[in-house]
Amino acid sequence: MIGLMQTITAQNKFTISGYVREKGSRELLQGVNIYFPVQKTGTTTNNYGFYSITLPAGKYELQYSFVGYITELRQLNLESDQVIDIELASSITLKEVVVAGEKLERATESAQM
Image (cartoon, rainbow, N blue to C red; front, side):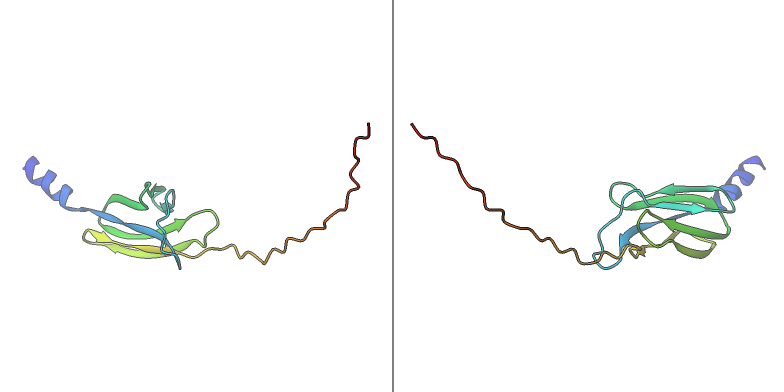
């Protein structure tokens, strides 16, 4: 009976995994936070922009956040292993930068003997 209970418990956990990319360039983002606010648990993307977390079956809210990007929220009914790839949009809009300079005329001194 105990073996059966362990099998049922193991079957009730599923893995959520995927890649997080920057919207537009599709560059993989490392260090993105994937957080489940109600459960107070989460993970981060690795050096390749990949994340993976195993949770019990149920309904979840996922929060994808990264400095300089708009936080993405997703609702999820976890009933099987799922692959969720996300693209985060930048929250920073850079304006045009104009670099101007002046040429200063310098009188050169010459050494006289």
